[in-house]
Length: 482
Image 1: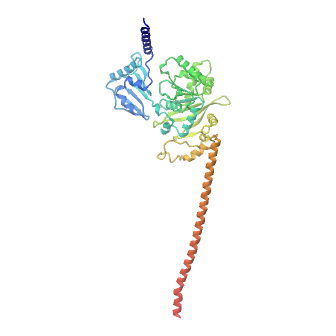
Image 2: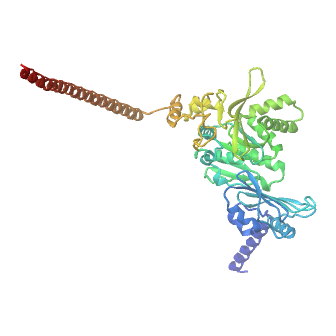
């Protein structure tokens, strides 16, 4: 065989091997382009045009429910019949290399980046169902969270600081309350010189910054494999690690790593209140370490994490942060949860007067935060105006100038000589302007005084002329009489 024929044969064999490897790999897709090649979701495709869409729930072909801005309503859009809906679900299961039938009647898949689908078929449900969660990662920014009044301007500043320093944070809340959105917004505020890692279970957000690496655990089913990868990630010592919606049995591993002095973790946990989130981590530690007692497991949780941020959804469907608390162990060894900020019944954030540990770290790093933010009488400011708010008559908000004055107090600054020189020049200019203004005022007052005296002299001469004019006819009459 000639050299040309041998090279051609080798190239063909390599192509065959590459195709076999590609077929063995799971047909999982991450980009919008790959997802769009698979096809559409049929009749409901038009609903995805709405950027404010939260989720879609389909219970049979004729029952399509849409959640928009936190409110649900029944849509007029529907499928032809249940057979069409069932065939659509089976088609997508086939495209991602999975099977859905009577034996395995449930499946999860990604229709596109930020659109996650969970589907069931009979006999698990009486009709084919689909639940579609629409997560718009491009909307997960601090600016948009402020515009939606999910956070105040001061809380946005606090969250940006927490994104830049090394501390372990729990973001807890019930489903669809703000957890993933907040985690993504914080990840986008990580400084570009810091190395960040995202570990997600449902591909709900993907940070495109060059300093970030994204891991998708949806294709992993083995718990040991997940722990091995997480262990490798943590051993690489990233500056920030963002973990979203992992299984509860992984929490024990993360708590153990954090209690062993790993800093920079932010993890989301589904819970009904902050204490419930802490309890979930504690129970996870106990399940993995049955030989220790409850108090030791609880203390391990409190040592592993510094802060817990709790999110919720109010009656109007607005997703908000309702509290930020610090986990501490007091001198007597008691586990204490100290609230830093709470959302009061007026819909405003109220500081408790407790100063957290991260404030000292922020001061050491010359970050722009004032101690006034943690005082009980400080009023937080929101993006939108409260002029038309029904509560405005009860809650008067300070002006922006007052807020800037408060932030100026205790603000750590390390000005250079040039900055100080500029400040001195500005101060001298202000003093000169004030001196010139005083001189002008004195000149004006002097001219006003001279004018007044002139008017007074004129008025005296006029009054004398009037008296002479009045006396002249009287004297003339007296002469005639004589």
